Length: 386
Image (cartoon, rainbow, N blue to C red):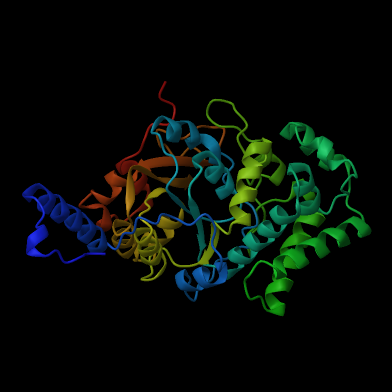
């Protein structure tokens, strides 16, 4: 509040200059649309925020229930060397996002996909996190396996031991029904309006995990499963470039961090188009309102589709509007074994790549790139630097 001061109590020249400086700083923040409030500790109305950021969505030829990027952890060491931490996370696709979120520890995370079904799958995950006390119970409910009465004694098990335990405990009609009931109940209490069709879609996704367990693979419509598509088991047991298992279910503290973010509605699943006029700009406006910046944009290979569709320049323009940390990064995926990229290895069909976001947005010619191979070769962070 500004108070008028009478001439008998005129402030010193220093006080006037100081007050003017403070007002100038405040005006500058308002002009940028920023606030000193920061990201809230929890979001009361998750549905309203999802509606604010989502658009009509679109079609993709797969349910994409799990990732087909087995080397998704290969960028983690380089991200740590760059000091990528906190801020806001934006990513596409299913649960591989949680591994990146667990490593970065952002204040808020947005998971985006052109398909509304991806948002519904994340409500499946949200329901599992809400009910599960630890990783073992999460895995049991996810795959419809029995939940032992002494489930808390499994808390400190290694991921290898947990995977072996799930593989040794087949789902039954009773345990699968209990898991389905848990997910349905928790999803209906997530604060998001769901139709009967939405609930049926969530149930269909859950049934796929129950039927195939940890052997579930990525699939596409009209194309046979490829031998290089990883199973859920392989994704859980995967390692980073240093040989460390760093999936979000590899240790209890990462699981509990993701569980806490979901409980506070700070993982926001959005139906959106990265090249559209609403999603990224809406996230940017939301972050600016709260004085926050993007630390990670995990784009997978979405940019490849945008280049082929002639909409890559629009995407570049949207990314340039995002408030970002100075060490913010873009994570990409390049598919094709032996593609000849310097970061490619024989171990992985898909190559994970990392680029500093400042280098991307500052590249005056990047919007005119005509091939994805040219984009990923244009600038990248070496992943295996000593």
